[in-house]
Image 1: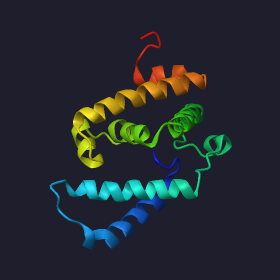
Image 2 (image 1 turned 90 degrees about the vertical axis):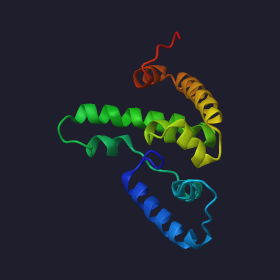
Image 3 (image 1 turned 180 degrees about the horizontal axis):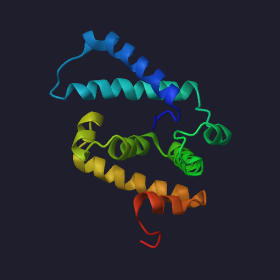
Length: 159
């Protein structure tokens, strides 16, 4: 969902990736990389293709009227709005920055794993990650949402 913005879009993307992976399986060559790197490239390309074709529709009204949890509508709406702000800020980042942030912090891969998946060294991933975080901080500041970055990252703007 972090790449698409909506659950149904994520499900469609997973189905598309599965079909593409099945079609490309006969072209897979073991080059010393984990098989997941092959699947990641297919998923990455499918996500890029889908993004080029459509932009996800995210409506605040829809988020408030259909919260993820029926227990605390206000808190769910606030989290949904924060997600939308982050999604908008992330969409303005370079694709390489967005990819590293998603793999590291949303999907939970280590820098070495991200490096293997993307064909970069661990050091290059860490450098890219640092630049991406700095750019995200600047984008949220430009949007007047730097406090969101501070809440998410636990960092103080004065740092």
